[in-house]
Amino acid sequence: MVKYEKVWARSIGHDLKGISERIFNVIDGKIDDILDSPNTKSKKIKGWAYNIRRIRLGNYRLLIYVDDLNLTVYCLAYLPRKNCYSPETRAMIMNIARNVEKQKSI
Image (cartoon, rainbow, N blue to C red; front, side, top):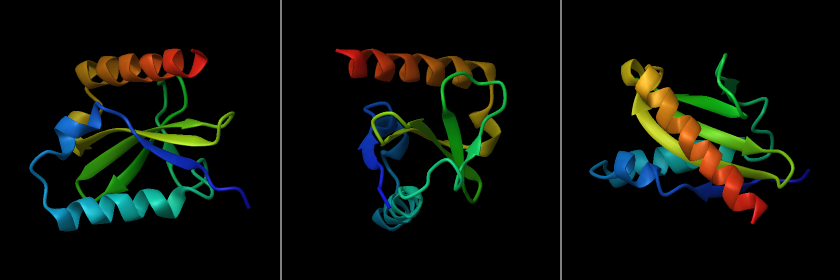
């Protein structure tokens, strides 16, 4: 079975700043767990463009972009559940995904 590659987007750096190493290891481990089949081990966010998906981590959500063509999972944001689906967050995540798409086509 082919595993997807994991890529941390620059945008997630701000979200991860200040978290403990233990929590980061949980996040990293969860991503590693889904790399063999990210589309079945994460949930698509309804109404969002691109292939933006979410992974539940307690009261937080890890937002990822799955690129099936290049077998890559981009980690975009790690946000509290209550802020995760706001219109402002949606616009920010769509902008990040658009930038990822542009970088791939270069």
